[in-house]
Length: 289
Image (cartoon, rainbow, N blue to C red; front, side, top):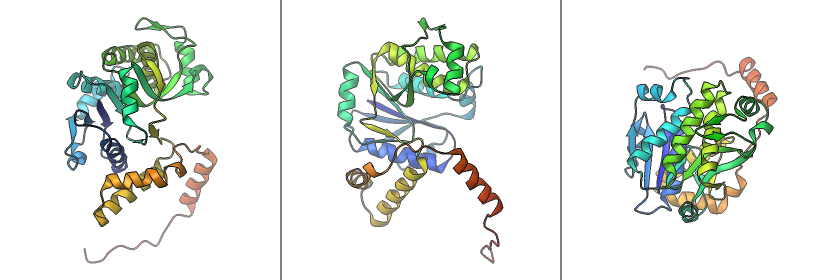
């Protein structure tokens, strides 16, 4: 199994999340498994000597965005890059905001049986308000890569994309072709990569959910980032094993930390107004520097 991450930029919170995810997998995988990071900033992986880095630059990112300058197209291109290096392995792409809590051997068994895994089925895009609906109005009934987009093609979350080795090339070639075709047709771009992977995975694998194994906390990042930072600080200060901290978290706290939290715009707007009109003032700084 090749487990891969894709990190662009120098956001510390992103690398904290990546570290937590990597360590959650590292505690279960075997010697034949590989962890790879496609990244513009390999410095953040220097302390993880078991992580292989594929370093790219800004020019490569620009090229991967393609003719329509669609950022999330780069995810598929990064997966292609890793597949070219590790083509004999099952390929598991993970967003940084993921965490393995289930049995990775069960994931391997599913992949070996021809199943593909994605984070979860969000339903058909024609019934998902706003951007997915707008996208589907453009592409429903259209054909890309020999596939006619129809009612059988649901939208799956692409925070986890696990592909059996025999199908990896077919899935990624089809996903990229569908993605580019939809963009050529002027589809709502923000979910095109996600839907392209969903269709390609459905057509080439027996698609199932990774939720019983991997938590994807995309809507509650702030709480999970604080948990990760607390575990990192404790392991440094007490010289504890970070993996032991993860095991303790799973045993005692994981069921009490939500992976999904609905954010209310009114709450966000009110907080923004309070910060604007009642922000901290009378700031003082160190002297003599």
